[in-house]
Length: 181
Image (cartoon, rainbow, N blue to C red; front, side, top):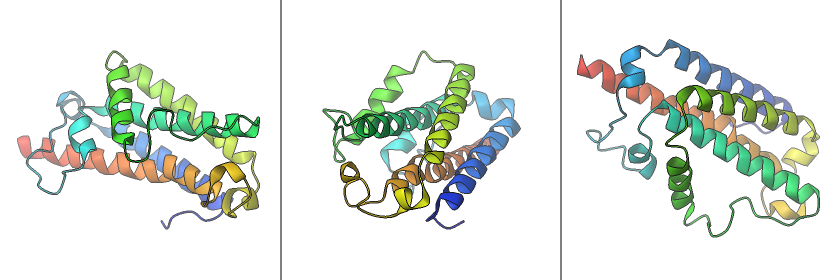
């Protein structure tokens, strides 16, 4: 599916992406759930996240934390509290460090709890999307605090596109596990 450019497409892509992700998770075998992620044999998987995430919980927590960044950013700015999406001291050049902070923060979080947390944050972010008109989401310049991109692009990045990323990673893990047999 193409990157959403309307509210209707955003809602559909986000909900479908979330449901596809959850269905894939429900289909994961015990071996896939218990085998630590290891993509070190694939030369194409060099980005930091391929080494960072060691299991399903890590992926779910990553999605949850980015939902919360978005929820907090939008809520604060709507109240007139100027706030960037990324909390200090992080920037777009150092957000990988923030992702590692999230990873470390949740090493004691259970898989079951991470599923509940993501379910809740997905529900909240979709409710927030509903509060905006198509124009507010996809026209540039509607909100000063968003900058040069439309608000909807942040919702796309932190919902539908992020779900595609997570599913791709889980499918790659399944392939690694099948090669272990």
